[in-house]
Image (cartoon, rainbow, N blue to C red):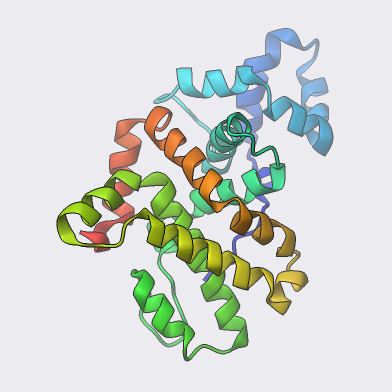
Amino acid sequence: MKLIQPNCRVQFTAADIDFVISVFGSKIDSNECLVKLLADPDTRDEILDDELIFRALLERNGFLNVSSHFYFYILVRHVFRQAGIDDREVADYVSEMLAEFSKTERARCPLPNQSPMDYLFEMLIALQKADDSTQFQLRTHLGNHSLFLSGIFIERIHYRAQYRGAPDVDYYETLGRSSFRVARDHRLAQKYELALVLDKLSDQFHDIRLALNDMSDRIISLGDREDLINKMLRSET
């Protein structure tokens, strides 16, 4: 399984840069100057926080030629700031997770010599026999998976809890928070420089989840949500 890192911003494509230029082109004397500004991390972050980019992303929805990394970072960063979550690394991590989980195979949990796992209970069972390194990967995946489902598909969770007796959102919050916390304390969290962001994900899980709920309700189009539901929750139906 791929270990999620807060590196969404370094994966922007030429098309993403072109999109930013199209937004600011008339306000900057030279496109070459803007490209140089985007190459500087601090200036890049200030440009990405500009409301103009967020608005342009929504207004041009359906006619976008940007990467999933760029798309999710701009949306996540915007709703997080509105919710008082101003840490860029947290936004970067969650954006990368969403970009990866939007690919069907990334949301599944593959282990060596085993079929990929779709259900949280399968991953919890696998933890009991996993070696040290695999336990860390499973814990981070459990945290990511819990945040993804409870953040983007909260209505589906409520529906299944009410009509099918499935766990409600409290279960996902508890599992996600505890999984991030255990992963934070693992030796590999220091090796991969993830301890700090995992700590914040654990402590702020509830607020992050609510911000993603807001993003899902107000910003992501119905078509996008239905497409994600069909891809990601096929095994939950």
